[in-house]
Length: 630
Image 1 (cartoon, helix red, strand yellow):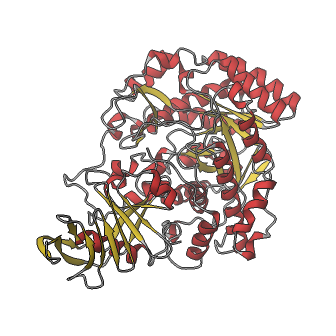
Image 2 (cartoon, one colour):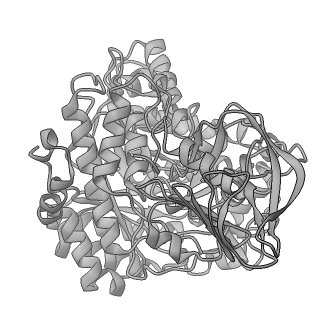
Image 3 (cartoon, helix red, strand yellow):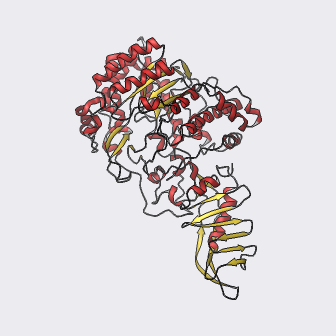
């Protein structure tokens, strides 16, 4: 099973700063997709007392696990980061593949894939990197556009949250001095003495598992506010609609065929119970001097059809377009009860088109996951701000509050305007065809060919759709290589066998950095060819330890001295200088036509592997910069 392996801070900082000093992409994000400000508009807002430059961010999920994910989202204009949900059980066996975003969104993963201690370090690294980027001045941000906030997420029960390891994580995020001081030595000298923030977060979104009873939710939230000292947001489930209304909207009105099982509603709070719960927590928050908010919504439990996600999983978690309608219906119902006195964060089917609508409702933060899993990945974020800016310009608004007011009509109170905008927007959602099943039924096209190690359609879709930024391109000059296989003769000579030549034609090649690949399957979903880039393209391991951990997995390891190891069909080969070794042989290939050295009798030496190792060494260790050569 694949394991995520964090990248050293020193190498990540070096790569990012080097790329920012150039003119090309930064972490493969095209430079034109970097968002540097509002171009005369103020996108900023306040969340639990923290000023952030924009209300947009990645939702807690696959885009907020590793430091480079957070940097990429920041480059795209995100300023609120809902960090991946952590829990005491941090050695999970997650089925693979675990993400299917072909039409709407489905997943079967639900918690962090790092150890708690690794998660803390990744978030400290990410915060430090963002501060380095701002201090470097290379981003060219407008004044004030640098402000960001981290929002914690924990689960899934009170007993686990009270455990000393989870407590250490929480307190480490609230005072990261020790981790910051340890990590700053990894940064280049100009940046290691920056006054890095050490209080990374004092806000938390509670993510309880589907089926968590209301009493447990209340107990956890009160504990986090009163004992830990955190501002809290309670994430609520779409099942608050109730089985009749949820199925009516999902199956009848929107036309989706997927079944919401009865079990999805069994232990979840009803809407009435949620109202009572939040009302009590309002009182508790006021007494504790903490902020309280709610989030709509968690994913929706549906039966897993098993045509891509593993059949072993009976249920899957749905997101994307239909969830937007179910979650917005709850926003409207909630505001009819509570008005605008409680902040509402939102994450359900957000994309560039409806992001301005969510902002006009006064929701914040507005976070996104499924849309970032689609072609373009983090590069899609720039369009969110283009759409928001155009909508603000259309009503003559310079700030988000002005946008809320003028979207509703001048002369109203902002709170009144938020409620009016909510009623109007939600009333029209069920008639909007973009959320219906018919508009979201077409899967990405497959062309019928199968991926191989080299060459493909070279559409490069696999690079941005990877949430962990594991896939990358490298330059390999077009060439034609005769396939030659040698067998040692009894007298010491070689018998030569030739096969069909290996032809390299494309402008560049695709590969996967295995340490970042958790085999989620998302690149397979969007690749026009069959087989999956993460399975059939070269997989490069970052260290000897990660290479050794997967002894049966094909892939490559490039060491600092240029030594290149490769596994082909589970058999291991190595090229070190002019020394080529493999199963049953060790040869000097200075003269590849007449290699010298030892080979067991009858052993066939396939020189194709020699050339592949040499090509990959020279190409991947050259330019452009990547995680292997950084």
